[in-house]
Image (cartoon, rainbow, N blue to C red):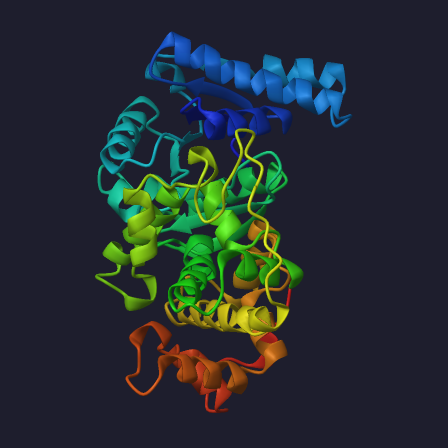
Amino acid sequence: MSAPRRIAVIGGGTMGAGIAALACRSGFAAVLCDVDEEAVRAGVGRAFEDFARAVRRGKMSAGEADAAAARLSGSADLAAIAGVELVLEAVPERTELKRDLLASAGRHAPAAVLASNTSSIPIATLADAVEDPGRVLGLHFFNPPGAMKLVELVTTPATAPAATAGARALAEAMGKQVVAVADGPGFLVNRCARPYYLEALRILESGTATPGEVDRACEAAGFPMGPFRLMDMIGIDVSLAVTRSMWEQSGGEPRWAPTPTQERMVAAGELGRKSGKGFHVYDDRGRERDAETGDGDVAAGLVERIVAQLVNEAWFALDDGVADAADVDLAMTVGLGYPRGPLAWGRELGLPRVVALLERLAGPEADPRYRVAAGLAATASGTNSGLDAAALSDRS
């Protein structure tokens, strides 16, 4: 199926404007909508700055930038989306706001695919507000949308195949690598990344290592940023909100339980770079002020402990049918810059070794946070005949 040629983006913030700019740079016409004329002007201005930045960096000619700008329009009236083939909402992560917008968009553009850029709200919850849930899916771009190469295409059992095909064609025409994801807590990337933060927090709470030691160990292993620095950059409150949302959606899955440290820091206003203090301390320009020397021997086993939980969560995602094996590794390497996909990393370490480490961490009381995924346990023991080596081929 061919990609839609005219789309609408609702929400002119950094994400929405970035997606609209990307669409126009890719040859599509886009209408950018927001709540009032001032917000629309700001969103269009962000998109125009995107074009200018691309020219300065030699990625577009001035003529190409002018053509992209001519393909962009803005409106504070949702009626302007009439006739578009796909609507993408990119408004704040508030369920009722997104439900109301998608329902309204569905009435103004009765033939359009309705997509949400949500990173955490179940697509089925949003689709329930629309007269035809088959039109609704998730099209989750990562920030900044012009630079990040991954898009999660999230569908529910009700999503129509034609809607899925059109959304995929659009994202691919924008130069993205698309991973197909089943609706569920955290989708794929947020779900499979959760252990990177939570296991680091458990290491800290056990007194095994400091944030600086964990960060340096992970960065030395090839992660773009250590987990504590990353939480500081994202915002500890934002990281906690995603964790809590996944935990609540799952009915209290122990692996995703928020930690006391996160709760305490958010209550104290220690939110990371934006507050000047999180797991590290920052100056008024956001530069880290508390570099540590640390003990390399203490940090030596930290990465393997975190990776074991990343491998385990990836296997839980496979068991739950969230995505196929190749897309799991693709999502984590392309989407987050991990040095290896978790499934490939597990094979490299040896799955029996991963299972043994998880069982050791679980201890004699069988801590449920370290429960081994059924597929991982079966494959490590050689009893999983349903998933062969070819199915786990490394595309990272």
